[in-house]
Image 1 (cartoon, rainbow, N blue to C red):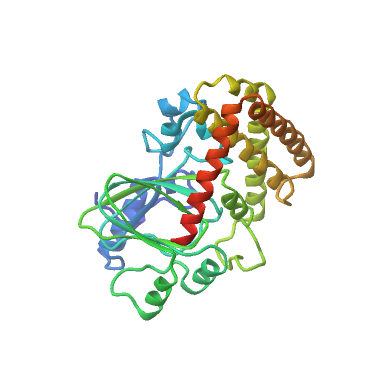
Image 2 (image 1 turned 90 degrees about the vertical axis):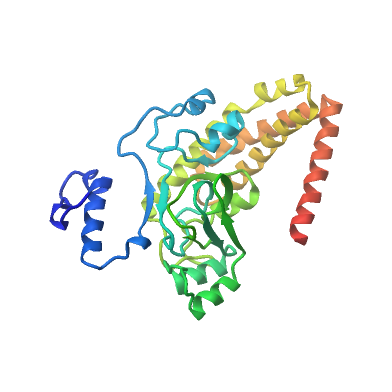
Length: 342
């Protein structure tokens, strides 16, 4: 639709008015008409509903029955099912949709929260580049913050790409896991629109948890000089994560784990026990950090001790389970060795 920039509502209007896509289109079309913006470089980020709707059917079936603003009718979390509860955070409430034409994309940046992202790529081809965590990512943000990596690349952009850890091509139908807590950038490369959505997730993987705990760091090799989260927002984040961890630990203690010995498939039983052991380890790690309030840290450690005891009891009472756990750990160790060698 056509429009004039004067039609854009003022900042004093209702908060949702300036987030309305129609209003954004009016403003963008005015810029394009004046020759200030190349329409091929426009990239719509974080699109979601203005108002909540009922959660997806798959989410409700697995206990995630809250409402959502997401445009996705099915999330990866829905497909994972009940095991998705073994996470510190999995956002399907206001996950965003990203749409752009050839040559558009998101400039180099690090997310405010150092979590992971599960991406779903539906249409077109897109390049995704990531850089190593810590000092390299912080340096890239300082030197190249918000820089767009479209052709022709300059010498500084080429040098930056030499330091990247991954450059991948996303194809229609791809589902991928990447870290939003490292420097990363995207570029749409096919003719026509590209369409991608992301779900932010904080897994129980210890490397992920340790990286998450660096969120908001003001010193050290990974400290960012721009794009850091505000102190109040950071406190709210840790309070929410601590409460989720506490609730998850409480729901996974003795009575529930004790029933694992009744599972007939040892490998499935081993997975359930290992997830709870990983949960306990993450509980200890978070409780010992400054991010978690002392009062809830003590409660977390109490539940961790109960969970440890329950997992031990389950494995000792079932020889098949004990053997399955041993084989699972050996397999994982071999995969880690292979990962480090590649």
